[in-house]
Image: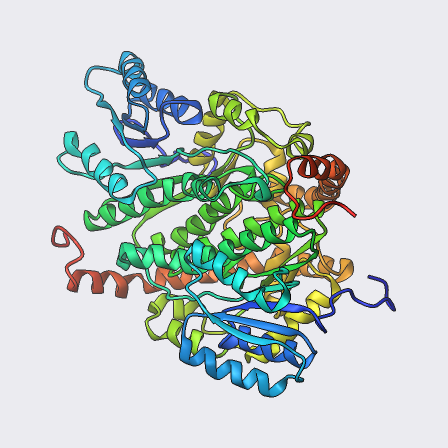
Length: 316
Length: 316
């Protein structure tokens, strides 16, 4: 995109499909898109909250704009496909143009302490919750010869991770693998793929995450400052406007991006050279600090395991 | 590890647990470990092949070495747990010391052409096939206060990927997410985590992969030279001996590693600086070449879709 050329990210009049759109980042995006004149479908599980958000969004919309809420469990493939088809009803069956796959949750826990359900649900709630919709969208768009864009939402913890996130980071890394491969395949069909890598976002998602977070995980993250969802949504749309493949909302994520982006398009050449230089020194130092935090937390964790009777035999 | 210090990777007398151990990399590893004096459990699905490999391995072993084959479907969590427990029977119920999670397969296909089962099975056969065993191993080792090492097997395509691998790379990236988080958590318990990132390995796995590979995927990979499984196994064990966290079997994978390793320990500082420098120029060029290959393949793919009636409407 040249300096004065118009971005081809233009939500006005487009049908925007937002998963996890009733709170946090998804809700902030929905509001922004409605204000820009888009038709918006918001998908989430909670019916009551969904209806409330739908009413709020309608209050922001012009009369000709379509705003709809659909309740669905998107970790189920059938429900993901049916929900997408249902969203097309007011549009003569045409696939949505822009997809923002914001659904997901985080409940950090040590692997040693996680039940099987916590481990599997964590994965399904980060990967399949978006992958099923992306697959349904790609199939429908190609069939209909439609163009558009799909934006996955991974996380800073999809670049690099540490103790406490074995039930979260695998899914967030997996989204990166899916987006990286799909970006290449979709060059065949003029469908643009993006992936957003936000840091902490204020709101109910983060509150739930923090309620039960292991002490070591807390310690590693103590310097982080979560940002309001509106800021994060703005960063995401700025990235889309600039045509970036990997989009961040924080300079720390840009450092991690240049250490983790494998063979995907980078953003601004000069800024990226700077990020690469800084991160090549900074990230290894950060990693050593994080490892120290784990080692320093060791005594307390093991004492707790002793008390809780995790071990088969008493300590020597 | 200092220049003259002895590595603490010493398979002799250890119980080594190898998934996918009846062919390719897993089998080559099993042979090497038996020759080094390890006790070896080989897990795979095919009973007939397993019995044959078990006999071959026993022929290489000293009489006191325990060599056993267990048939199991490791994409199932219960079977993964039961198989691990069963492997401990000749060892008074003690958890194995070293784990080599080699099971997995690859069947590249465009997402547009994949059935739901192909998409899901591809994921389960790359991620859960190792994740369930890793989880069972970690829980058992911690309970028993055992130390040891778990080596995941991802792929070059767990660093960077392209068209054709939407059912493979998500699982291989996810293994990286799991290993990265587990490496940190296991500092609490002195269990060492490694991840091996091999390029193409000769054998039945690669033959099956190539049988049905999309033309564009083939084109991007045409310069690759798969190596014999014995070479790959040797590279993996060399890395373990040196204490590397991310282990490669090819300089190309080292270039990708330095562009993709986020916040994990690097290997040799000076070599890694060189890889980072080269890859910062080389990988973006490679990526542009791969993107061109996709664009050049476009006409043929779309013509094929036209013939196969993928589209709802005729071309304009």
